[in-house]
Every structure is written in C-alpha cells, then in structure tokens.
Amino acid sequence: MSLSVEVLMATYNNEAYLEPMLDSLLAQTSPFSLIVSDDCSQDRTVEILQRYEPIFEGRMRLHLQPRPSGSAKANYAVLMELSTSAHVLFADADDVWDADKVRRTVSALQRMEAEHGVDVPALVFSDVRLIDGAGAAKGDSYWEYKKIRPSIAQSLGGLLVCPPMLGCATGANAALIRRSVPVPVDQVTGHDWWMMLVANVFGHVAPMHEQTMSYRLHGNNSSDQKEVKLTSYAKAPGKMAAVRHGMDMRRLQAQALIDQFGDELPATARARVERFVRTEEQTFLRRRVTLLTGGYLYSDLPRNLGMLALA
Image (cartoon, rainbow, N blue to C red; front, top):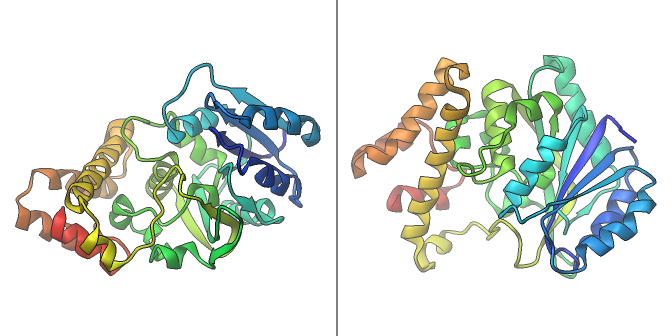
C-alpha cells in the first residue's frame, strides 16, 4: 500500500527501545507508509519488526540488508534510494513520537511547497524534548541543550559548520530526496546534515518552533549528543585533536557539494563552499580571519571559542 507520506527508519540492535517507538508510530493521527532497513542486527530487532509488520496492515515494508552497511548514515542512504513518496520523515528506532508529528511535519512541508512549488527542494525541522533510557524527562528543548539558533539553517556559512537539527526531527519533500541521492556516504557526516546543505543551496529550509517528539539519550546514540558547555572544551581530554578532526570532516563534506554538483551550484554558494574548503591550507591566523569574516561559525560561544582556539 503506497501513501503520499513515508517514514524511513534505520535499525541496528534496537531491541531495548524499538517497541515504544513502533507504538508511537501506530498512534499517529495521519496516514503514512513505513519503510524499515535493518543493518544486520544481532539481537531481537528483526523479530520485533516482523511481529509488528501485520499490525501496520500493509503499511510497513521491511528491508533486510544482505551485509552490514557500516553506519547509520549508509543505512539511511539506502532508505532514501527506496523512497517514492511526496513527503518523507526520518525516524530513529529508540525515540517516542507525539501522535500528531506526521501531521504537523507534513503540513509544514505543504506550506513551503505552496509558496515555492513542489519541484523545489524543501526541508523542515523541529525542536524535540529529551528523555533518558527509562523515559524520564531530561530537558524541554534540544535547541537549548545544544545552544542552537535554528536560524543558522538559513546561513550556508554557519550550516557548513553546525547542523541545527536532529535527523529524526526533519521532514523532506520528494524534490529534496531526488536532489540528495546518491548520498556521498564516504564524505558526509550524516544523511540529515547533507540533506539540509542541499536544501539550503537548491531550495529552502524552515524551522518548526515546536517540539514534535521525545529524543532518547541513553549513552549509545549513533551521534554524540553531549550538552554544550564551555567546560566541555576546557576539560575534555584530547579536545584539540577532536576539534581538528571535526573540521576536517566538515571540509570533506563541503567538498562533497562541489564534487556532486559541480557547475550546478549557484555561483555565490560555490564561492562560499570553496572558501571554507581552502581553510585547510591557510595559516593559523589567516584561517581564523576566514572563519570569522566568512560566517563559518556555530550559534553558541563555547563551540566558537573551542573552534577558534583549537582548529
């Protein structure tokens, strides 16, 4: 059964939290199809998915990877290739969605398409609440936890350095999915950040100033989600190497835009991307001048101080 909305979920050894997530999908107030790609789980994840499959009454498609993809981003890249719907949401297997998350996300996408057209790439993203492994509240806002200004999504310079969202809180239209695949997995830090960069360059990105789900912090998340504090830079061991490695990854991801789209990149965007990539070759002082004058900055003071001091 094909619907105009798809939820894409990548799974790998998620038995501990998968059932509450699937229950929250079943409780959605708007219709959708679910595509799950399992990355060769070694626990009961596939067993749970197969048990839930008939409960979705033909709206669930289970894809079993023949061999491990190597990462969550690679697994999501597979899912994006499988997608055929007008609107797409991305789900982590260990969270809990609000019952109207699909409805609100799709409505936001439809408003963007009404303004810009369905053939223009569009991405929306919301804030989320934070819970721990037992489901207890840890915070009302991911944006506050990470010191995020969602408006940074409108600035290509800032977006090359800092993604202001979680992939599980995003929604994309078909035009963006088509533009974003194939995902250059070996060059990007995540399918979600890549999609937001593509949307910024070729279309539009808009924040939803509301929470649509509860994001579970349990210590084994696929992405590191530590709270942003100045002390995390002052005291963390090996921080210099970590910051420099992070900047190398960001430059590699920026280069992927050039490699994948070449002359299709608007001239202004290409110049901005190329200037950021060239910071690798610059002297200590010149690099910092470029980062500051080019707007290649985080939306918070602690990470900017860490980047400017260590990168």
